[in-house]
Image 1 (cartoon, one colour):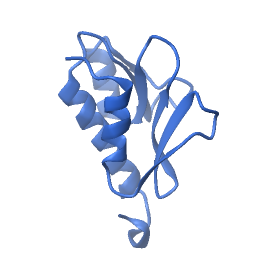
Image 2 (image 1 turned 30 degrees about the vertical axis):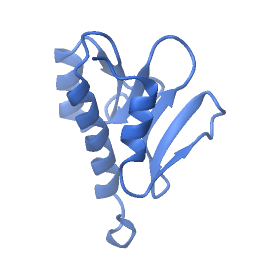
Image 3 (image 1 turned 180 degrees about the horizontal axis):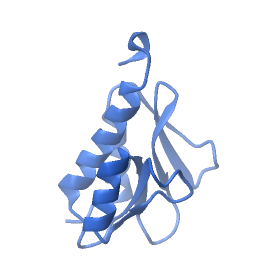
Length: 115
């Protein structure tokens, strides 16, 4: 089963200390943890995608191994990936990538600010 935009928004919102913001307008959801971005998702159009933080070597492997994962759209291509949901995309992997992106951002926060 392919995930929907609502599924992606819920997966982000379920993580501790997460906010859903729209700094680029109502057509782009930005998930943040303690003010730091860990996911971006366009809310318009037929294509459902989400841009997530990924460690460079892991991101390169994902892009190489999965046709539905590309370097981050409008982001630093070494540190961000864009996941496009298709019938071929692995829903569990997508959920894991959201958590991984969140965990990377949290790890970069000062200890006192970590949820």
